[in-house]
Image (cartoon, rainbow, N blue to C red; front, top):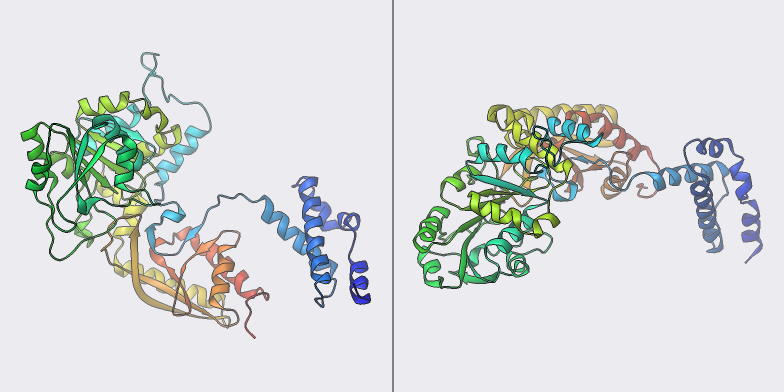
Length: 473
C-alpha cells in the first residue's frame, strides 16, 4: 500500500460519522437500523476496494451519502414490481401476460381485504364448492355441460389425461406434439399423467384414418392439440376436432381438445388470423376442452376445463385436483373477467387484451404521433425522436402468424449508447421495457396505457440526464 492509498483511506468517513449525517438520520424514519448499517458498510467497503486497486479517485462525502441512499432504496423495494410494457407484445409471458380488466382488479382487492364465501353455500350454510362461482358462467359462455378451473393449462391437460387415460394409450398427431413453454412438452406432460403416447401421421399431414388405424383395446382417448404457438404451412393436412369427434363416437372414445390460448370472441373480423373459439370447439363435438385464462381470454393465470358433465365430475374427484386447484384471488379475477363476456361488445373495450388486439391502426398511429411530440418536447437536444410504423405481436404462444400494424416512437439518444438507455429505463423507479432496433429504442404504443405516459417521460428524463456509465465522449 503506497502513501497515496493510505491518505485516501484516512479520508474515508467512519460509519459513526455517516450515521450522524442529516440525510442518513432521516432514513431511520422509514428503514431499520440493520439495513442502513449494512448498506453503509457495503458502500465503504466498495470504495476501499477501489482505492486498493490503485484507482485514482477523490473522496466526496456527498456522493457517498447519495450512493448509500440509492442502495438502501434499491435494497428494500419489492422484487416483484409493476413494469410498463412498451414492447408491443400484448401477452408478454415475461411481463405477466394478460392485463386484468378493471372489474377483475376491483374484485381481487375486495376479496383479499377480508373473508369470503370461497367454500360455503350462503343459502344453506353448508360447505360449498370453490368452482361454483365460475362454473355456471363458463357453462353459459362455452355451451359445455360442466366446467372446472385449476391453476394453469398445463395442469388442466395433466389432470384431464391422468383422470381419463391413466395407464391407457392416447393417440395424437405428430404435428401436434408441441412444446408449450418453459420446456414443457406434450409428450412429457402425457408421461407424467400416466398415459401412453401413440403418435400418428406425419409432421405436416395427419388424416382421420391414421387415428383409426392406431385404435386398439388399450386406447383411452383421442387428443387434439391446437398448435397455437407455431404454424406449419405448405403441403399440410390436419384432422379437425369434428372429424375426431365422429371417429370417437364410432369407437366409444372421448375426444379431448387442448386449445392452449383459447378465447371466447372471434377476432377474425378485426383482421387477426381465424382461430377456433371455445364455443366452436365444444360444438364440434369435443368431450373436454382445456384452455388458459391469462392468454387470449384476458384474465388471470388459470387452466379451464370445460366439457361433458360425467367427465368433469370424474376430474373433480381426482386427488390431484386439490394439488392444482385455484385460489380465491383467481376465482375473484376469473369470475369478473367472465362476466365481461356476457356482453361481447363491452368485453372488447373492458378486457385490456381484447382492446389492445382490436385497436384500429389509425388510432394507434395517432396516439404514437402524439406521444412522439410529447417526448420530443421533454427531451429536446438529448435525443432524436421520430414516429415510425411497425408491427406488434400477440405473444403468449398465440397467433404466431399475426401481423399487427402499429405505431412506434423511435428514440436515438445523443449522449449515451442506446443499450445504456435501455438498461437505465429497466432500472427506473417504474421500469420501462421497450425494444431496440437499428440503434434506436422503440416504444410500441399498442401496449402503452394512458397512465403510463407520465412515468415514461420521467424515466426518460432521468436516464438521459444522468452522466455516468454509458455516456458518449
